[in-house]
Image (cartoon, rainbow, N blue to C red):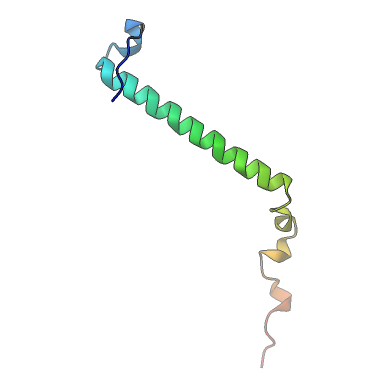
Amino acid sequence: MTKGLIDIAEEAFASTALKDTVNTALAEDSAVLRRRRALSRLHQRALAGQFDDTYDKNTYRPNPTAGPAAS
């Protein structure tokens, strides 16, 4: 565990312990970073055309008129 000295406004942690406030803020920041990275990967895949087949709904939704022939 790393320890460091930081200045924090008292209003930011008035209802909870300082350690809890800092740990929650760090966890939230980490989650935001993970979401940004995931969105960036999705964006790169979209630019590469990996989702182009979703524009044609016949590629992911069966056509009810082209179903099996009734006997």
